[in-house]
Length: 400
Image (cartoon, rainbow, N blue to C red):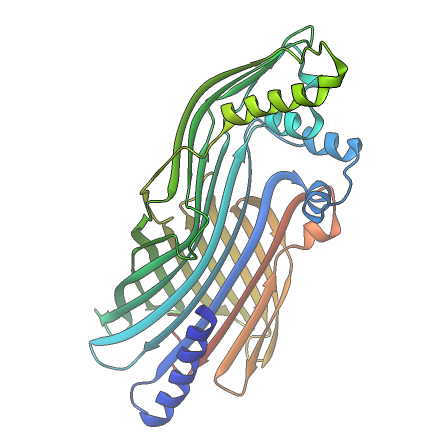
């Protein structure tokens, strides 16, 4: 559906450009995908994600590089926008987005427990703070208008429906795990909350989304600030919401007759499944969308182009993501790009990219600031791909 919408916007833009010469429409497709962690090693992540065997050395190397608070996250932001940049005070625009996001926080000892077992943690209280996961998969469609407050600066705002395909929120940061010094018993204090949209139908929740921004040109700088995903959604009544405050105590399995071994194990597993069950009572959840704030500034110096951007998303442990793209040579149809980034779910990384002007009015760019992850497998995982396609009828140099 989203792809079809992008095609519709593109065809509409081309047709409209031939029909009217004065309105000067513009069309953008933007995509940014990233999976990063500031501490989790690339070697471990590649083996885990690929389903390969993970030896003990790789596991303990990963544990040694973790801190007390760790994070890993994934997001893919896809946006299409069609707008008019004419000389009128008001001008309409339409945008559509498709977004997937996962943010995870976890402590070192919880990772160690999950991947190496509790043998190395005998006699030790293992706190699970932070232990949080938030997941979103949704689309928005926005209709809005821009208003020129000066000849070079415009404010804009819009609103429209939002559809959620998947949602999950888990927070067990107040839980803890303890193995007795003699290793003959295990206790788990499970405290927290679990929320999840149900498994069917495809659209789990419906609500609204809004966005507001300002942009323009100041001297040699083209800039834009956008606040989006300002909205609220209501999920259907088959969604799950559970709060747990449970103490689990396990002292082993007593077997009186080996012929009943299978039944005894099944009974213990059933008890654990019953205690850990997170299906809860069905209810009609509601939640705010994960807000997103984006700022961008472009300028030129001699034969170089500079693009600085800042991104903040309302996900667990997400820090402001700052990126800088340097392109050269400025007036060429094909430019080399050096992208750099810091923040988000990862640290610093650098890479390579390309920007090309196609058929005069089309500008395409593709960047991947992930060189450090590809060249050093012991470095924290950081895989990023950013692309943009711009179609301009006008000669307007604005970036919005």
